Image (tube, rainbow, N blue to C red; front, side, top):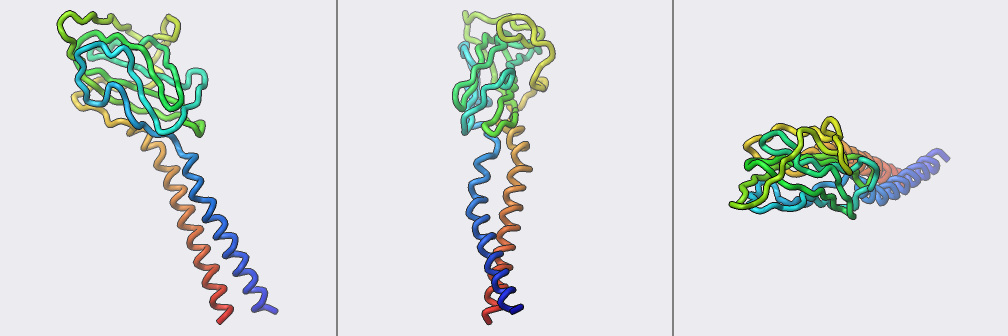
Length: 204
């Protein structure tokens, strides 16, 4: 009776592990969004007012109150976005009127489709052509509809000489989750291997 029970246990373990391995590949679909593109692109040089600054991720974003923020900061430390960030599917954008020439830093925060906030920064250079009207900017980030939003919602680093890598913060946030899926897959594969070995051993 004992060998038969052991064989049944091994078969049950193998079936459970196999079923779990089928389910695991679908789990990464719940991972955080990541940045696909931005406008202006990181490192771009603009000579005309862009009108808007926008970003696109790989999946739809959640529209929640104060969930999406795009702040554009100039070389003079002033903010040049209007304080309103609109979300449409996988994209988010804000209206801007750039001011002083130099490097501008865009800091963004959105809510991923899995409900987790993700953020990042990138930079571009503003070299206005002659006659282009310039914006005044504001000392503090603006709230949508007017007034001051107070402190910057997104931590905006001081402009630097290097364009920030797009999506670096989001990638860093996603890494622990990716590691969890990989670790779980390895564990389940090990369980499946042990189950197979038990079945083969009992049959022998």
